[in-house]
Image (cartoon, rainbow, N blue to C red; front, side, top):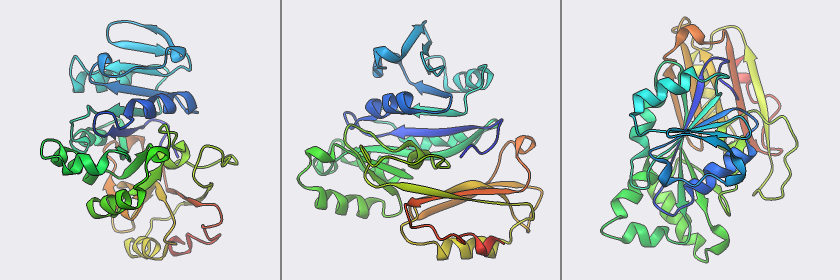
Length: 298
């Protein structure tokens, strides 16, 4: 779901070295149905598929699908300003954090004017995760990245024979995150980005099939009704996201995010570019969303 025609949604991708961050970025660029900008600390740290590259210069790679990839070598703030100025304007910014960075710290920049933070996505190596967390040199870094995640992409599950133990470790570190299982980082982008599903998703290459429903209304929503909705959602609902206005402060547009079992509500930084009224999209496994899922909001 696009929050507004003028706001760029920000997805931060973190995870330790070798987990599959670059593989996920390439998958996003191949499968994206929107214009995406990608930021990396240095082009030497990411290998964009050659088939995707149209042209390149020192700080920018132009991709064949109209997307772009830019370097952060000249500074984060400058790079963000350049993304806002791109024409045509991207609808999503994907920031790949380095393998030892805290993605939660980087995500703080996703709340600035012109941007709306979608989620912190952390890629975890199913084969090596338990070993990494037990390592006295890297364990604290890996565990911190997992704790910062809204979405955990558990990658390489086809190579893992200790999945039960890995699940238990992740549940202890971050029980509220949405957990997506993948091989070769082939995550369903509708689920990953929480966007409205307008197509029938093939089960090939994905674990499960998802559907979405949308709530639209014009009158501000009572906070107690929003909290009742959250409390009564079916337990297998994966994501809810959108912009609403609360009856307690109707002039302030609020970005609402529910990812897994964690939810967040914060004021939109760029209020002039906010749509009027309320619009929320809910996503869950096919058949899991009640037709009247939004009754509490009405």
